[in-house]
Amino acid sequence: MSEIVFTSEERDIICRKIQLYLHEELDQEVGQFEAGFLLDFFAEEIGAYFYNRGLYDAQGILASRMENIAEAIYEIEKPTQFLK
Image 1 (cartoon, rainbow, N blue to C red):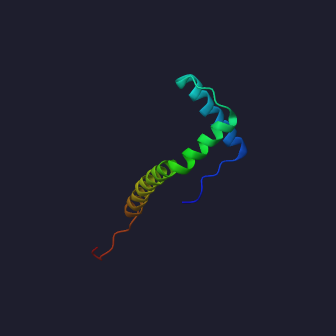
Image 2: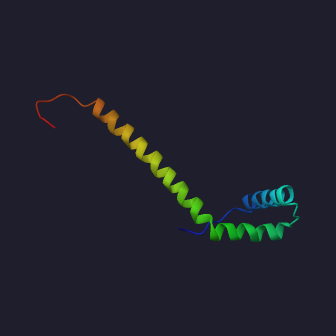
């Protein structure tokens, strides 16, 4: 897995969300710098779990779509004297 990298704008938005969550849920005030460290920790330590879940979900969608394509191809098959 490649390193999870966010753009500066994405990082700012995520850090603000972390700050808001900590303030509202835990009554903890943290600065942008501390929220950035927490984001780095999440990305490094648990990011792979979310990344892998996304891959599994994508595989499921792809398998479903491939099955639909196979069925669509079967439906347009022309009859012949050959047996399958």
